[in-house]
Image (cartoon, rainbow, N blue to C red; front, side, top):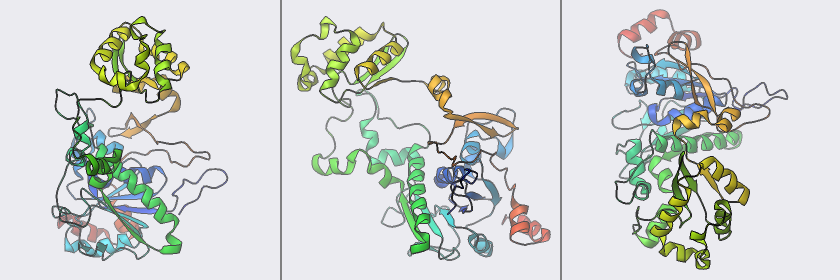
Length: 404
């Protein structure tokens, strides 16, 4: 495992080589490992990873290099093509695996992986000391192991979706690929731990189920075991007034008042209005019974106020509160700009787009500058000829056979 030197010149995972064969499910894990300095080699089908066909697309760019989503997930990585599900790929997979410290996979009936033993959960061609991380919708074992899922299906089946959304509307899921990305983040934590202990225990197999990652959040399994399906569903928000989202003159404002002292802090923020002066309101159970009335009263009190002003007053009074920002507002927020949360990321067409950067800072710096995502098959010659020692004629023949 790589180490930072005294000058901070070596990234955290310098010297670690990662082979990613998992496609969309392992994409976020690969991106995090690449940000940390690992040499991540993406092996995608000859026709291209499906993320290459996912919007949004860069203006003026056509073909397999146009996806900004692919540009985000695959920045700083190298890319080759390989039909990894075909038995004919076994020899090349063995050569690639011999160089890999970490292998990312997502085997399924729809996308088989040559050399994968589903019953044993092993790869015939990976190194004995390699860290093998498998991210799948429902895990490598059990009766649901071959079920397919999208990120929204993963989120819905976890039970989390039941609790999100307006009481009189449908349940809601977060946009994008959050459920899969969270599994990727969990995988990276496991990979880092496995690399740390690798010299002592050797290689390890990590079995990451998206369903289990989502279901373990917010004590959902434990709640279901004790209460059954939550009868409140989406009828009640999290907590009682003043907790909730209110519409101010310039946008939505969120209050998270979960402690007894927060009621006094809330009144201080609003200047102790007469409408909320009833002493019994200090009891959260009373506020629970008056949920609708109180929410409407508070909404009227803040409707003409600036949310920026309320956040400043609320923070000063010790009340957890914040502005809810649209994506455009978030990108322009002065704190986000000052922290460098969004970083210029190379995109197709030699441009850059501000995209989410690393989730942490380190001194000395532990991350690497972002490079553009690879073009389809960009590093075929570099890897197959330069690193594995094959000939140009072999590479051309494999391409003609649809193997690379």
